[in-house]
Image 1 (spheres, rainbow, N blue to C red):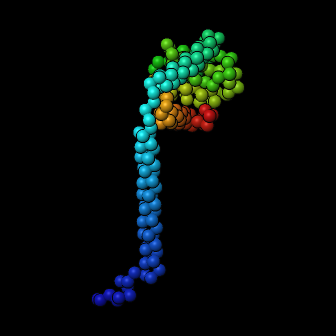
Image 2: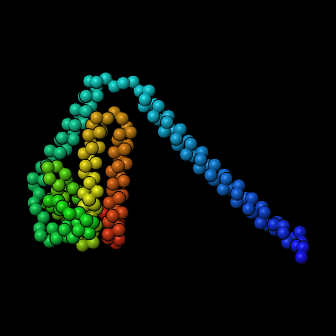
Image 3: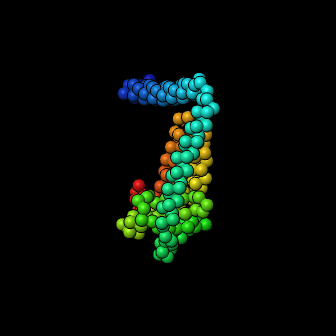
Length: 212
């Protein structure tokens, strides 16, 4: 049986629709390609601008390294004073730290101390790894908030972010004049915090927002 021409024809309402969809898809892909090309051109231009900079005199570069290293050393000395005034965490705190460490597979626990200094919770990795907890914050938080804070800080240890911190500190001391080095350092620290927050959310879904 021969089919009628009308039955094989594409409905008039569908043809323009399909054509418009393909056109919009093409325009979207083209605009995305142009955006990536513009971004790449800007990156190349920034690189070329840095390459064209005149060499920094050795005395100026060395002076900048010394100044920056001195600032870092002063900060380390000041923080060691905070550590000297701290005291060992009580057993109930150590129990919570141990449980949180076990939940993320951290086998070696850091030394845990409490302090009255106005500092944020942090992991200090000098001669020995030390988890510093401000006593006032610990008293203000409930159990879920405490575990969220501990998981975030212990996740940094589990990821070995402290080694990255020492490397980036050394790199920025050497390349203090290069803004890219400082941008990379900033991005590395932000991404490390995001990863640790994600770990908190995975282990403790109700406490992920409490690490901010």
